[in-house]
Image 1 (spheres, rainbow, N blue to C red):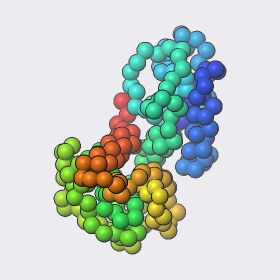
Image 2: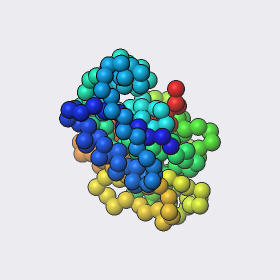
Image 3: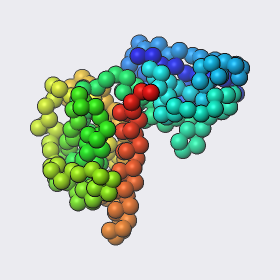
Image 4: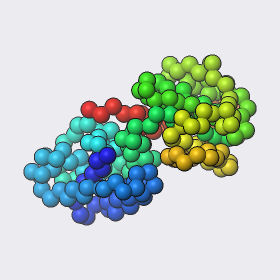
Length: 233
């Protein structure tokens, strides 16, 4: 795995971006070297395809998925207006690790993990197995069915499953999605990520508010999983 941190001094988000990158590498790929690429001129920026400071590339792919732009000496703001989010770095590193079986987990396996499974199956290579489970499974929420159908994904055949029913030896990555609840545990030495998302089923208010929450969760999962399963250009 080739990890590059491209930068020039003086941009305010550089130190925090590097700190997050180092923490993610230590957790997910200890021993992997980070190449520090100091960009000091417009000529070098053009040469290396520098898209602003700080930039992070894993196996040559920008973590935000940028494949074009005007290379040059400029400070960079990521989605949200600041440094790259930790999940963005994790997704890039995990993609480079080449997982074979990704398991999404939440408590009830009724909303977040079900939507993650459905979205990931449309994005992942055929060689990657995708599944989901919960510590206290119930049933798939109808709102999850509807908001995924709005983007052309059918999970009508899904059902809630227990972590105990998962083919544990085949799983090499588990991503927990719970926020305020106690997350399920996976008792095997695998790569673990935590992408805490508020349970849309717990949103107070009428049906419109609840569906809006499900759509927000769907869109956030889509954004993250598109980065995880991005195809290198």
